[in-house]
Amino acid sequence: MLACWFGVGLYPAMCKLSPRQFDVVVLKAIGKYDTKHIAWYMGLTPSTVTHHWRKAQERLAPIHRRATRPIHRRDAT
Image (cartoon, rainbow, N blue to C red; front, top):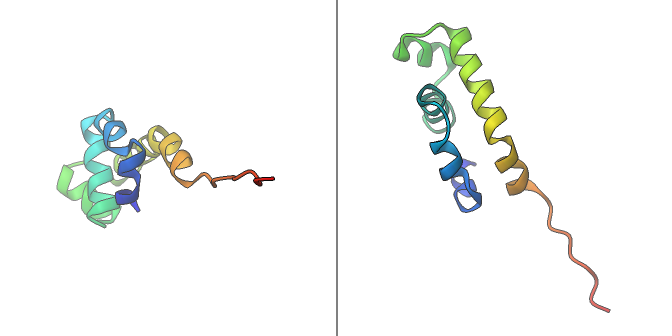
């Protein structure tokens, strides 16, 4: 799913995330690791990982909305 967002500005938006938010997004969304493993790997509590995941989702939500917005075409009459 993330791969399709690169054409709509996901890459620049991800660069604006904090380093921890970026790491959590990469590990969770791309690496498919669960919160417990990410917490262990990063030396954080699971609740801190969840916090960074939520904040990253909030920052990336406008990009996701643009990527999934339906395209409306006008009838050519």
